Length: 196
Length: 64
Image 1: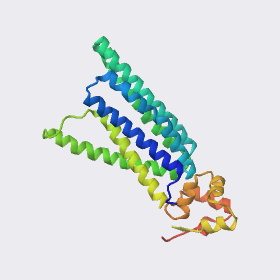
Image 2: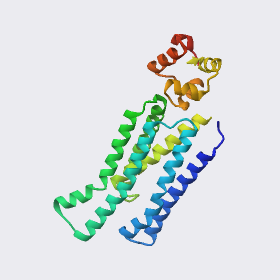
Image 3: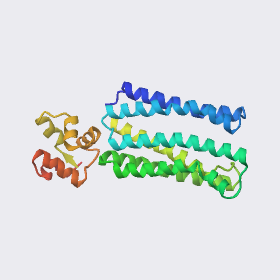
Image 4: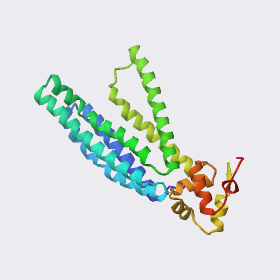
């Protein structure tokens, strides 16, 4: 049960390529001080790696008998969210630079990139409601609880470090990536337990 | 909780996948129940019992 199969290996490699690509281009854009719009353009190709990543993950899940219809639907929605986020973030940043808006339009542009995140939160709720397999649902709930614990812990420690001026301020929207990392770690632990 | 799922399945010549399809759950679920890593809910336990034509207590027993 613990042997690493070809689909799992492929999913791991696509996952590594995605994270290296995203973080690599992000760090590169920051180092070269590319500015918002070129940075987003540079980060677009690694974003496309999400497609083979999701497909290979589904093959790996199907192979170990853990792919449900609800999971497939969630994966489609999560991909839609990711691309929607990139598009709306670009629209907001570009419009803000070009139009220098104020008042309600500024509020609208500021909230625009948050909409796909709210959609993702809705998609997670839908997954839990639609998942017919109680064991798979329990695994996701456990991973989500672990992710929440990680987020609370990180936010609390970072918050006090900020209060004592040890570290810089981090925007509140960082909560979602931290939570997503926690969900990934929790899911990986669940799969590892299953493979023992 | 202990269970006789693996034995009952083997007696019928079913794979984990066969049993999973009959119960409309994932193969991972069957594996987790068989190996004692997961105790099914009462509705699923009833479905398992109905499938094998047995009472729940004939399949699941107290103990580690």
